[in-house]
Image (cartoon, rainbow, N blue to C red):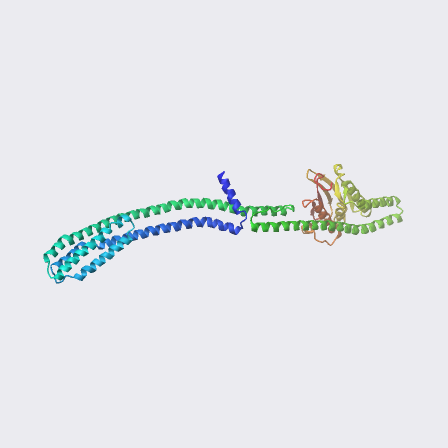
Length: 490
């Protein structure tokens, strides 16, 4: 529960942050605690090091005064006995040096307890200096030898011994203090290591939490954008990128949403234009087929009439009438398969009058599919192609066969001929031309491409024409359509 509250708190903080600010926050969360720890540790180490160096300097200075007792006693004894090499000025210079050193010790000593041991030394030097002054005054007066010997023996030696004892005590306790500081340094180092480990664990946890929250706040919107683009790529133009709290990604999301809207409009416009284009092509196909076919049929009827073959004239006229009635279909785009069958039957019966010596045909459409709705002029261009490019180019008599089959997914209409067929190169070129909507130079190629594209536009890209052919073996065209339950126009 507490962890969730922390996450929610961090999420609320980062909601209105830019990506740059979030990454900067992550860096600060990692660097700042380490920086504070290092500064604190450097301060502690420096303070301890300064204390240690100060104690070391005090001990060295105190050790330099270890011969104070012997040196003062010797110098004063030579002065008292009148030694001509005695240095009276040197005594006072040495005392001044000692007083300066003692003052230095007092200022540099870090502990109040040890600083208190310096005070008797200063006081002792003052008293010692008075005894030395007394001796010097007696010598200047020209006598008092016994008194000077007594002062040296009793007062000067006693005071120097006392001063030296205080200095030794000071040195001893300062050494102990140095040991304490060394121990403190060790403890500080260990404490630093412990704190560093604890802080490092905390930083890792905090960095992991922050990085996860920040990375999620960046990657999740990006993933959503990827999902949206994937949906749009599949054709779902209703998909929209979600609103985010990341400024940069929100700008990208808004731009993407605008782009999706524009693409959706363009796709709808293109689809509408394609439907109009296919409708125009259908009308163009009808315009190309009908006059040419009508001219040839009428020519045949004239020829039959001149031969006074009235029975065949009536049959031809009825077939021609049925053919054009099916072609018009009251302006409908979709007709039943029964009507489409009647249309191609009329067409093939008319053509059989002209090519009876080279063409035969068979139509076998399953009864269950008679009411199936099919795009008008789906079979006729393919049957025509089989006649003009298959049967007519074959030596001997050929046959065109139209059959059907269906399953739970597809309805398949087949137009087969045992005509000339095609080479692999010709077949591949025809397949590419039909699929890529390339222009073709002949009416049959134009008709196949038109049928294939109309089926795809109305039913989907998985439907359309499938062509197989072998040279001198014939050609098979499969028209793959959706099952009745899947057809939009059934």
